[in-house]
Length: 222
Image 1 (cartoon, rainbow, N blue to C red):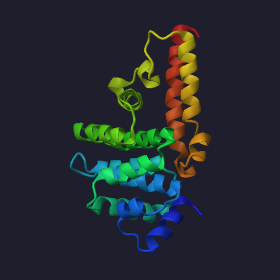
Image 2 (cartoon, rainbow, N blue to C red):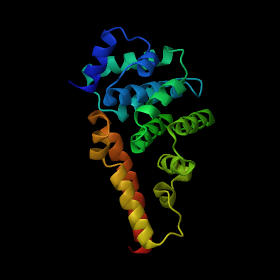
Image 3 (cartoon, rainbow, N blue to C red):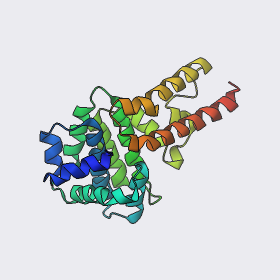
Image 4 (cartoon, helix red, strand yellow):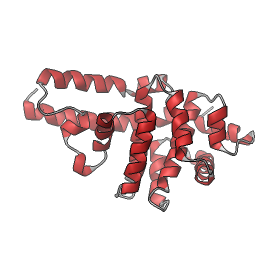
């Protein structure tokens, strides 16, 4: 059963208010991850005052979705938009579910950044929203800046992408890079509760980190 079929079955049971289910239910982690990203993405898509088609399309790129499963995705997305509960209800539930797995929460934030830049402009309201979600997740300012640097051109400095200063030694850079790769490797994230359908998102992050390290390696002749 795919993650979307599981969510469809859940909705068929009459769970119309997603925040209530996340708050009071005992969700499977992969289902909670998926609904959390959908809900937070839907709430954020309204943060700049309008939900654009580009933002909805970008969300679909975060997950692997077959055409026949798109109605299930759309239903959750629309329920989240209509839900009177604030985004923090979803963010706090995810923070509790993945308290011991911060790399999963960082991947959620990474996915939200991906959605936010869909219309080629990350609005101040969206950045404020993302920073607020990061605070609820317990993500440090340093980690937030590192994730942001993967997505915003003005921040896309290879050292910022890795989250390490240019004054670091070659050995420190190598060790830090290896640590990042271990933390966001798709296999580890799936084992920690991320659905297979979101593996491409982790792969994109890994590719960005690899590219940043390659640039530094050429510069330093590592």
